[in-house]
Amino acid sequence: MTERRLLVVEDDVALQKQLRWALDAFAVLPATGREQALAMLRAEEPPVVLLDLGLPPDPCGVSEGFATLRQVLDLVPSTKIVVMTGQEGRQHARDAIAAGAHDFHQKPVDPDQLGLLLARAFYVGELEAENERLQARARQSRMPGIVGDSPAMLKLYRALERSGPTDVSVALLGESGTGKELVAHALHSLSPRRDRRFVAINCAAIPPTLLEAELFGYERGAFTGAFRQTPGKIELADRGTLFLDEIGDLPLDLQAKLLRFLQERVVERLGGRQEIAIDVRVVSATHRKLEDLVARGGFREDLYYRLAELSLEIPPLRDRAGDALLLARHFLSRFGPELGKQRIGVSAEALAAIDAYAWPGNVRELQNRLKRAIIMCEGRRIGRADLDLAAEDEADAVLNLRQERERAELGALRRALARAEGNISRAARLLGVSRPTLYDLLRQHGLRD
Ligand SMILES: Nc1ncnc2c1ncn2[C@@H]1O[C@H](COP(=O)(O)OP(=O)(O)OP(=O)(O)O)[C@@H](O)[C@H]1O
Ligand SMILES: [Mg+2]
Image 1 (cartoon, rainbow, N blue to C red):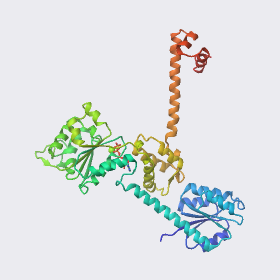
Image 2: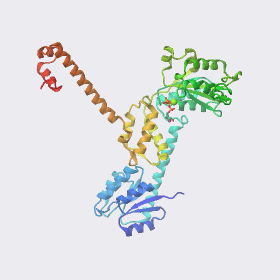
Image 3: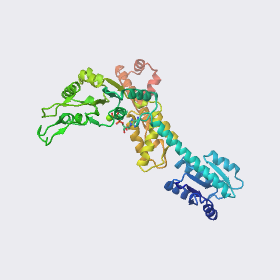
């Protein structure tokens, strides 16, 4: 069994020593005051803390003990704290429980009873952690790798489950950062092709002049720099899945070539003379409105129908009720350890802000902001400010609205005065306000003192 680390905060050195002897079932970390306790908590993260409420500089009162209690819970909210109270301690015990302590023990110390109580605190903490792990797994298990259980996503999962195992060409449409590439992977892993390759090519990231060679491959000497025969991405994906990302950015001449491939299912390498039969399942994605592109002549209609035998809309994050919170937890448990902050949490305020925000950059934005917050956050709990969210945006918006209104008002005043040739009564009539009101406005805008 892994050792159970117990932080014992007790200023009475003799009692501290006695406790360490008595509680030898645990790995005891001793501290004699608040600062030392918090430093120990940061470094060792003991799941259970035994806390004497009477600590210096207030050994007879409980103010220092309660301050320590609150700070421990702020730093690591899951900590189970057992407080030790003096003889007169019933009320203090009650207050401590109300403040978030797990349990209490009244002095003088009864080692057996205290030992049982602490073992139970460890047990409860372990159960909670296990429960959290199970819930996290359940949240993720619906569609491998994809987090979210909003109605919009459940609908998408049903479509993926049905279309995944087929060879139907699927076009994934959705805003930037909604998870199109992730969904493409899911389609592949749901298909009988899952043991073959998933080959992705980003049509927007490769210069158009190189894209053709990337897609179709080339023979040695096909062009300057073609030193050896190279298969294209289409060929590499044989018997697997070919993922054409940002398909809306494919130049028209390549659209024609791709269409020919989709009709004939053969490729010819650049400079080659031989047709190679290829068996791939094609999944494509774009954040552009493909239908609009087709209407404007930027995308071939016949190719569109080949690629989008089935088209799936990936909903924007703002339409996935509750998913932002699930994703936040998911990213926290993934990036926390990666960034060396194992047990970082999120404050209630920050959670509310995450839930309320519209996430124009979708899951990718959420992911980036959380990563940043984990890095920037000073305690063990991400606060609203660490996310750098809406607060400023709202303030900016209000500011802009006011500025806009003032600008419009000033423009109207100037025009009215010009039209009325400086006559206040006429200008007031033109503006539909009383003369005193107009005087006020002129003064406000510095047009008159
Ligand atoms: N539902 C989800 N669950 C877990 N992670 C997700 C989810 N959706 C997106 N992600 C993660 O968010 C990031 C962005 O997703 P992805 O690259 O698939 O989006 P995209 O729609 O292709 O974006 P873009 O249009 O910008 O290329 C990735 O790191 C991905 O793993
Ligand atoms: Mg993408």
